[in-house]
Length: 217
Ligand code: G6P
Ligand code: MG
Image 1 (cartoon, rainbow, N blue to C red):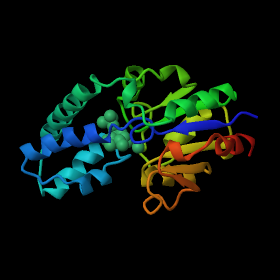
Image 2: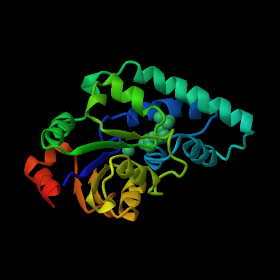
Image 3: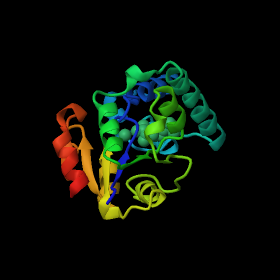
């Protein structure tokens, strides 16, 4: 009875939030919008287009569709400049051990991310080969908290939703997993991710016994 272990990317597998922050901040600065870490928190798990809308609303900036398009392209170019410098050292602590443990125990490993850059990032940090299926921002029409990304992920490996386990660092992602009827595991602060079924600060706090219980549940 194989389970589907579905991983979010940004903030769960790799710490790309810092690169998103720097790229968005550069754009915000150029528009004279005060871009704080608090706004950055609101962008976690949120699509690229929606992120821009949140930032523009913060600065009360009106923009034409052409402007928005131009800014989205610019932001992504700046973000990709950081991505191109990534290597395996950017993988968050113990993530690769967990991926190995799941594969050794014959489980499905799936990616469920809002990012359109997911595949190149997995390649850059050299963990693409662990994944049995990938669902990313190029596949999905409805963004988290809509469960579509996780439902597609479970469907790709033909596992029932109740036998799927989601690792997420964003509130929207935890809500998506819960709506999908999956086990939700928060990676981050319990106070923020209080809707999750289980929560760990990071993967170093999650031992193999716990993962084995999920496999045998
Ligand atoms: C993830 C991140 C968001 C990001 C989104 C889209 O959900 O947490 O901060 O905006 O992916 O990523 P992309 O790489 O397509 O711009
Ligand atoms: Mg995330």
